[in-house]
Image (cartoon, rainbow, N blue to C red):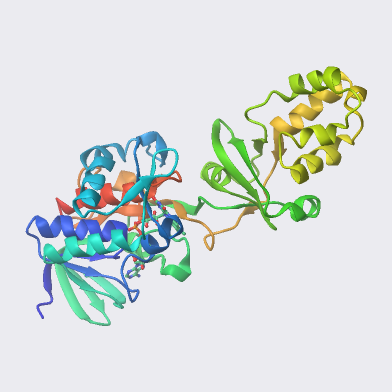
Length: 392
Ligand SMILES: Cc1cc2nc3c(=O)[nH]c(=O)nc-3n(C[C@H](O)[C@H](O)[C@H](O)COP(=O)(O)OP(=O)(O)OC[C@H]3O[C@@H](n4cnc5c(N)ncnc54)[C@H](O)[C@@H]3O)c2cc1C
């Protein structure tokens, strides 16, 4: 087998697979190297096994990056509609769940099989269980691996983020960046459950399993969706979303009753049901265990007509703006994505080539572009991978 290629792509995840087929179709001779025993492992486990592969509405505001404009070009050159067209070409059944999120009807493996077929049809050579020991660069890149030595004009790093190491995540991309003097924006877990301190867990730990439709805010960002109490803290889609914007020591605020005006409601109850206990009335609006706990922890319980205006205001604040400072995150073990990564100032937003190192490209999650929950992270992988594939 010939060990000389036009392009070597490291990492056969979402970005690496689409970049390989895009470059292959462009007539490039492509080698795709993957250290796991199979390709696309994160795609397979994504979206609860049904891969939320994109979103009907994608805009740069759905992404976090030190340079919020960097993602714009690729997202418009290979958009959600281009990926949907590909999915439809393969007759893969899908549906919209909520908020424009598109999921496979069947299994995530539909997406992996589609990408594999695209790679095979474009003549991409794929090697799994391949570990790379060393990268050298003279005129070309030379990769020393357990499967031999390979060389190529272009090297694409598509090794993803640091989340879920047991699924094959490594810091290979960050080390490669280091080797070539490429700046890195410090990494931290994103789309990750938030932890509460021991004192709070003693008060709330037994609510584990309870969820509530809420609005969660941190600074100027807010997300509506389900939050879930866990044995260690808070999770659920709205909490995962806000975790992308949360920094150590910051307070988050939860509105457990986004549809209600509790102050007004309590005033009404005082007239309509003066003798009823507030705790019983509240359970009509919010899960009983949660509403009782929030009320009793802070305000005691008595018939509704015995609360004065000041107390009513305080109760409304507890339910509409419950404030807590998380003690941390559940870390890369539980995070869906990695915030930070290759500094976008080092890359061309058109080609994804490093400005300093000719022929070296970074794509996908390893780059400092992180999406919201809802198909945005895969779309970034598709957009950056496909666009880079045209230039590698
Ligand atoms: C549980 C979970 C569920 C998710 N669900 C969704 C979802 O539904 N929708 C969504 O948009 N996003 C989802 N994401 C995020 C999404 O999976 C990633 O953002 C996306 O996979 C990133 O694509 P990538 O190609 O950059 O990286 P990856 O898909 O992670 O691919 C990187 C590849 O590189 C390989 N690799 C790593 N190190 C080396 C090395 N040293 N040598 C060779 N190969 C290496 C890895 O094994 C992997 O195959 C989810 C993430 C997780 C963890």
